[in-house]
Amino acid sequence: MEMFTQSPQQTQALGEKIGLDLKKGKIKQRTLCFFGDLGVGKTTFIQGLAKGWGIKRRITSPTFVFVKKYSPGFNHVDLYRIEKEEEAEGLGLEEMFADSQAVTMIEWAEKIKKLLPKERIDFYFDYISDKKRKITINYY
Image (cartoon, rainbow, N blue to C red; front, side):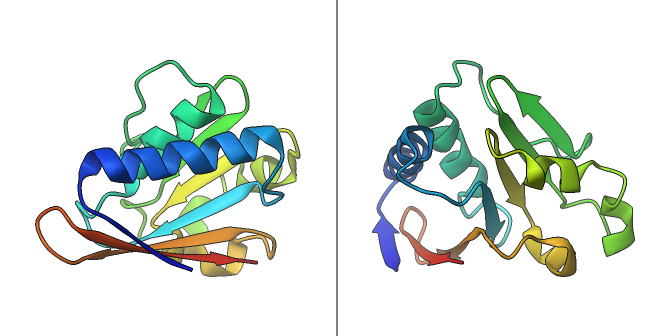
């Protein structure tokens, strides 16, 4: 499925809708993987997801700590700084993937393709113009 957003606010609103659907159980996948260049809107989208999930805190990308866990059951992983898949093995990803009550968002998921669960949603973000983004969503 392809969607287009015309502003960061629209990108965030789309994320919020999907976050609400996750919270209500309308979407069964609990791992969401994000692909795309720097500045294309992945974190903005995840901020919307968090809002839809019910997170009140400000969501920032965990680039330097790799993982931030928010209550209730919202895990945000950013793998931008890892260079080898093995570097992600000590982050507790398997436990996050196994938790059926939580959702796990993974930015730069292409860096751990072999470790990703089969049941997941992949979001591909493409830069169209300064504000316009194409978001391709694949359900597995």
